[in-house]
Length: 197
Image 1 (cartoon, rainbow, N blue to C red):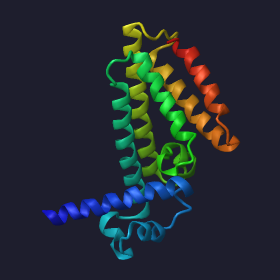
Image 2: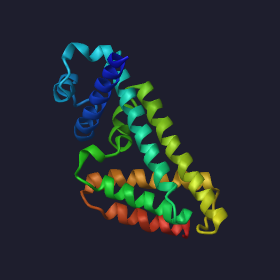
Image 3: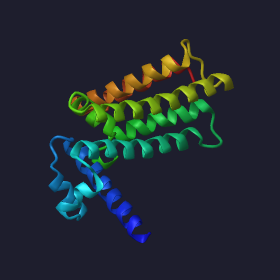
Image 4: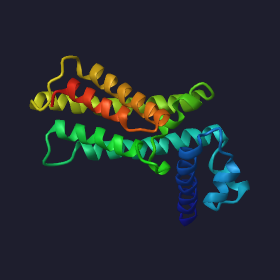
């Protein structure tokens, strides 16, 4: 049984190392040898843990979204705050993470969406599922905020959540292009206008 845990630990070590490297260089720009060397895992053992580079990419995204969604859940469940405050804290965390130079914390959805969506259907579906999970949680937070009276939105909560996610995804891309926080500042102003907290 300890051997199985060792395998799981090694697999997770590869994923953790890859998250940092892929976050900095992209998926196509990174060779498996670079990831395995950084993770201190023998080259020949990669296929013991992943069937292919594409299967590895799927696993990387699944691992990323599992952690990301757990973090959203914690942010949106923070005690002592209104649902509006919790949701605004989520957008503030997004800005702090995406505006950071720390590649390990960068959103892989932002980094990989355009790169892999046309190259790998399984990875595109992993991105689609992960982003749908984010939108589901934002929708729930908006519904709870409206019911509580801490938010006042004009549209339907799901459509509002989709609009906000698209807004912040676009702001993240523009912030990378411009190398400034101005797109996030604009996204925050628009978010406040849409949610009316």
